[in-house]
Length: 73
Image (cartoon, rainbow, N blue to C red; front, side, top):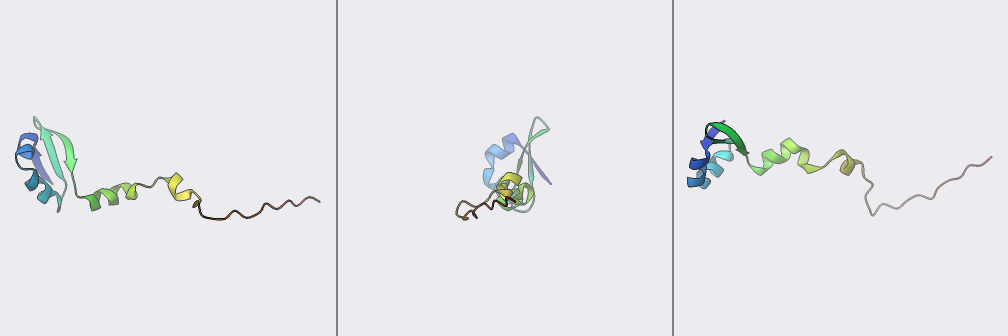
């Protein structure tokens, strides 16, 4: 993975973006990694496109509700 100091990043944002197309780029501050730059497709793959389990289980708003059945004996 590529590594770039925050100073180098500030001076060459375009280069960092080009590098992030092929691999994540670690941005360091005084030698310590502080940020990661990656392309959006990689981000979506890692985060599961942003949907939570609640989103995945939610009933669509346009889905009609079936009438309730009352089976009383």
